[in-house]
Image 1 (spheres, one colour):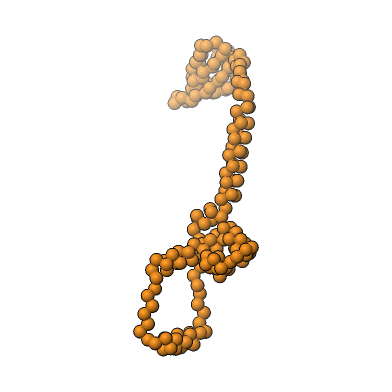
Image 2: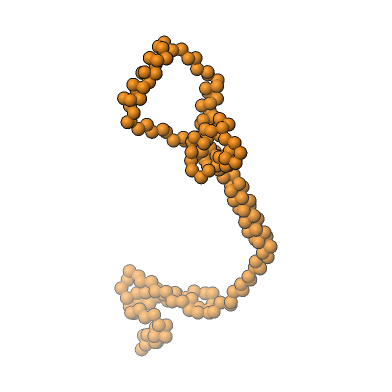
Length: 189
């Protein structure tokens, strides 16, 4: 059975199907969530009817009753009646796909185990020891302007640990120390 046929689902529930046709409809109902829901709904209606049997009490004669039924059929014969489709719940889908879900879960477990085993076999990274090169002696010159015009404070860092501060008043700033020494040397003259 490839199409959704509620009549065959009802016939299966009533026990009217035999042989290969019954097997095919059963297999379809087990695989199709819509038909499984229809089967469950019909079974529920059947159980309710069995629990509450109707008590037929006709106030009219059978001929008068059937004449009213025929009159209603003629009056509403051209109207279309839409039957509600059954609601499919997630458990129907899970029931239909339980083997696929089990296979996906097993595959996921195998992949996670393989990744974990690969990580466990990987050797620990060897630490890299970085040795610092000896510091290169160099001079750093910083220039700081002061509030007094033509006055600067300069610090000179050399290979010695001492810091030399030179205060010069009245001289323009020059970052070149050689040029500064020349300016100092010419001050005496």
